[in-house]
Amino acid sequence: MLKPLGDRVIVQVVEEQEETIGGIVLANNAKEKPQSGKVVAVGAGARTPEGQLLPMTVKVGDVVVYDKYAGSEVKYDGEKYLVLHEKDLMAIAE
Image 1 (spheres, rainbow, N blue to C red):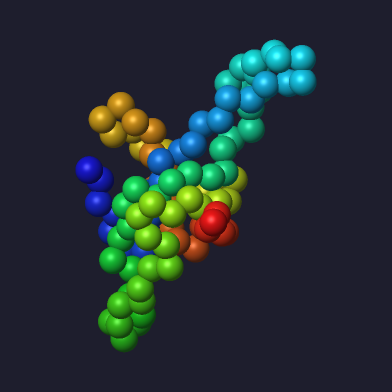
Image 2: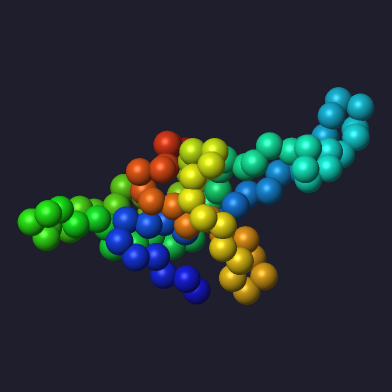
């Protein structure tokens, strides 16, 4: 498994199949980029200039909402993941 460094988080992108009211399935290029996913790995946290470790707010298993164009897509073992900084996360879905 991937292990993020610092204040980075690895999110498994949740691909949702979208249909119109008439039941027509939209093509991938017509869909908007997903903005939510499940946290699968969390780094140790950011460090202050003094070297103090700041703990992460999110934990493995949280479903998060992130900025639309944030992070870098990574493929690992055939799965699609997104590597984000914690600051790019906007909310935890409960």
